[in-house]
Picture 1 (tube, rainbow, N blue to C red):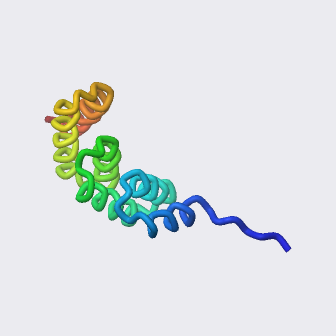
Picture 2: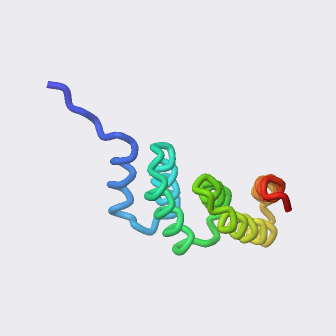
Picture 3: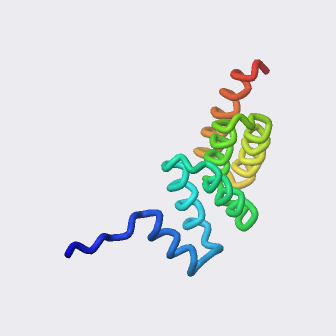
Length: 112
């Protein structure tokens, strides 16, 4: 009899149950849901992460992109703006560059 191993999402959810406020786990779970196209669950986990750890810089790009995907461009722009401000404050030039580029692309799409 073959034992089925847990898939990645199940494993991450088990870990998250033990550490519900772990930023990395929340982010990883959100990304897994996003890859499975369960955007509602992805959004729920990104928003929870933002409320628990608003300085988790990697969150901003991915949350904003998800908002773009679900046609919430104004929310995406707000998240990009928050992320840009945080990246400047932290001196994270890589994140700043990514967020600025994504924000500029969204502005171009919106005709601003």
